[in-house]
Length: 271
Image (cartoon, rainbow, N blue to C red; front, side, top):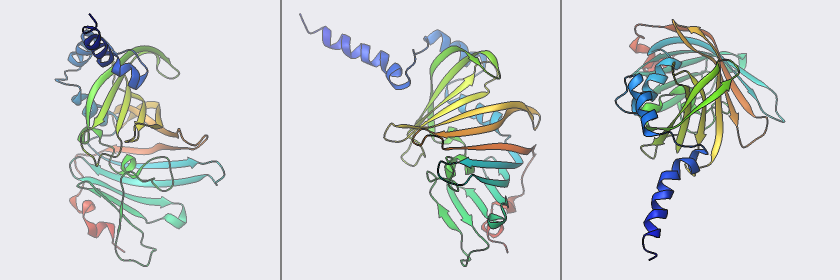
């Protein structure tokens, strides 16, 4: 008489697993299909690709400022100039402060390199994607290669009605990305999007141990490079109270292409 109880419990656990992982009620299949079909997605994986193009153009030039507030330490600010080309990589150069001016970073083919022309070494240093970017809450990968569609398999895990301080009453869609290989910088991420425009509202980052340890908030939605995008990103540490970093666009320009020479090591180490 007790045998049917076991598969029933197992089925219940499987159905409620998204609730345990995200703390939210999973959306009905009909809601998910309506969301995906409404945007022309054949599968949830297309969501990340589209959102990446909303956050940044496919090819761009940008000037941005990053500020870091960390308890017990002096506030820090870096201004950076960046070139990005989809499928080629990212080239960045620090403009300020003076002590860091001229530092360059190259992301290409899954590798990140830093070169400091003021150092004694003529060679660039390889960076670990998951390490902190210049002492900030952002990782090197967050800044150098923020393309989640390459590393994560997507699934829609929540759809809810919320009030947003800047966007008003919206339908918020939660899209979870699960790492597809061991070298992915996070174990999983959950991106929350405004359902109609696909504007990113916030993102949660989980360590490979399953710990939720960072949360990003997007704001200052405005026309940048011809498209409505977030102009301000704030990454909050959930491990240290009051520790956060923010990035704001000073300039953002969409480009038809970016010169190939920017993604060569010679550009990184030029004197």
